[in-house]
Image 1: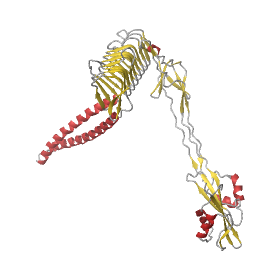
Image 2 (image 1 turned 120 degrees about the horizontal axis):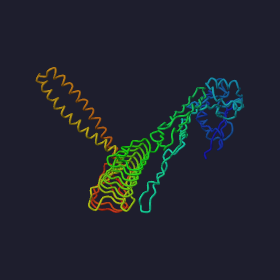
Image 3 (image 1 turned 45 degrees about the vertical axis):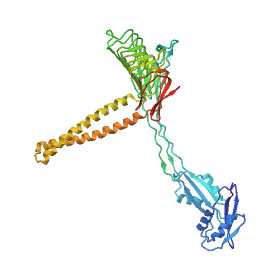
Image 4 (image 1 turned 60 degrees about the vertical axis):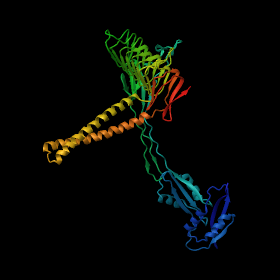
Length: 526
């Protein structure tokens, strides 16, 4: 470790003396520049080379560096450094050359003139007055930082993410959806959520006495939903039912049971809670529910729900739309659309399937996807895809179906606007010819101006649609780390789309995974 240095100036009868010491444990080491600064402040004339030699040698004994004159300042020097944030003040004390102490009055007056008003450490003022034979620094004052308020918060007394969905796998590979046990039931009058109010925080002060205001905490609302009410700072259920938390609302859904088929005896069902159907949903009938729907038989009609759908048998020429997961044994010539996951235990045949997250077809003997159109945002896992006959089967991952639909609509509208623009150009050209020949009447001139206005608006609309189209193309290209996993066989004739990338399979492959790498779809063995 390099030697540190400190110095001491003193006045004697024949001049000004300098003592420089060196060591490794000096508390406030000084530099040559700081020494020259003090000499200048004290108006002591000096020879720079002499000072440099003495400072470099640091022999620990006094050496005369200047003669006395009447302009020199021998008393203690005080300086105050205030940090940029005004939260700390450091007092720098250059000791007197004639051992004259600093008195309290002088010290307090100095601090007052510097504007120091808050956080002064009174307990160390006596130490400052006692002084030190060497240069010393004192943390003389510290401000008090403000304390921001805490945001309001919600304390939930139920599982906001719902209970774990773990369907029971039977020995033959089928999934028994009766054993899900996913419903959280609450009694009327139960506290569901408690609101913890925000705090205002505590103000602070800097060393100059200026107030520092805290940021008050942000408030939070209780998530009031169906069959709930606010009592004081708590959200309480008003009826018994199934609890659900979505879109920042807590809802209590009651359950409706159909002890048979949904047919002419029941009519269409529209219910805000959960629905249990002990039979089938017949063709032509619709079930709408805000919660979960369990169907013991087949779905041949339409189900549109806000929760999970469990179909013990199959979706046969039916349509299912669910905000949550869809569990079904098989889908045949049907449609299944989920914003979450779709789990099929046996097969998907000639159907349209769209999942906002994952698709799994690995139960039963086949675990098959054949024919139709299957689009999934994240991953697909299946035993077999396609057929030995080369059935046209489209498999798509890495694309949000809603974005694809929006992209198609924008492309259609952009084409329509471009055609209108071309038609308007033809009309404008004809008006220009009339205008050049001096045959443009006042009435036609008004029409001419209207077409110009329309053309300007059309041009702006084309520009807007083109920008939207480009943005969507960029989003569609961002596939992410998605894959298609085939546990057994994928046959020729299958078309694989991953974002904007496409592959038409020309031969069979076994136990493989498809991913996008280096801007193309690649096949890897598992």
